[in-house]
Amino acid sequence: MEKKLLLVVFFFLTVVGAWAQGVTTASLSGKITDQNGGELPGANVVATHMPSGTTYGTTSLKDGRYFIPAMRIGGPYTIKVSFIGYKEQTTENVSLQLGETLVLDYKLLDEASQLQEVVVTGDKDPILNSDKMGASTNFKTSQIMTLPSIGRDFRDFTNLSPQSSGSGNPFSFGGRSYLYNNLTIDGATVNNVFGLNPLPAGQSNATPFSIDAIQEISVVLSPYDVRQGNFTGAGVSAVTRSGTNEIQGSAYYFFRNEGLAGKKINGTSNPVPSFNYNNYGFRIGGPIIKNKLFFFVNAEFEKRTDPFYTNAVRPTAATPTTATNTQGSDDNDPQTGLAGLRDFLVQNFNYDPGTYKNFNRATQSQRYVARFDYNISQNTKLTIRGNITNAFQDQPP
Image: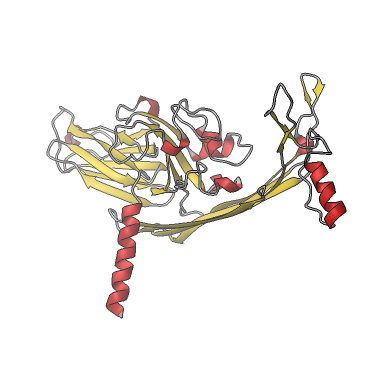
């Protein structure tokens, strides 16, 4: 029984590992030389993620080049490079973008020169990164928190990509249908495979995750990167937040109704039907074991009512099939249209089928995210993340 259980657990972990293929991290590379330009093989490179104390390390190859893959995005990082007989160099305030390979070259000075330790502090402009793998747009945590989002939808940010159609639905990039996009969260694909909507839960007017749980979003088109594929439109990658050595969190509430909408367009009155939007939630993250084990949780709830529009049709000789969106007007002949049908059922069968206009439909959704990060060693990390989305919306018969 024990062997069977271990086999099942091993199979589960193997399958999850195979599914979670995608870009969720960043990398660091470069070349280490001496003051005369000679390669320094075997130099030590240690990168420390300062908020969490997570460390990554490697040594340079025989040509002096080094490469550190699978690093946490964001920062700031402190990079230290050392080699026997040479002054240690330190670079501070380094930030890494999702899917980026940041190049930092170092020229170490001989200790015999009696110079002080070299400390470099600054940011490198990612736009000028020669290692970019094609057209891409990244949205960091600070941008996600400050840019306006009327619907608390991550597509409000991806629409800012130059290749986007600019419309939240159908979620098109480069003129391609949303069916040709690929959306991943922490490397796991979350497309709506049935194809009726660009996103899971999209049929209920909800999103699969809260933007408050997202650390960074990346949009790529035609990347020269074998790790990214399964799309001919755009690859949209999102990475969830992680805990750090400090307990951090937030609680929020967003409200909107018809009283906050404009009622005139170019001086002409425009009646606004009643609607109600409520979005509230919280997030919290921090250490379980400092520098070793971290947690992050987010819960978000959304309740809204929107006017339900019907296509009321009144055929004429000139326009036999013209349809008009209506939410309160009666374009049907009451003797032959839906109003007449309702009256007939009420009068003859004492049955009221309800109304086809002047009503709102409700939407409710709940989104939960939980994540745990474990620094097993300098070169081995473990991340466990789960999310649940539950949503429904009133639909016409």
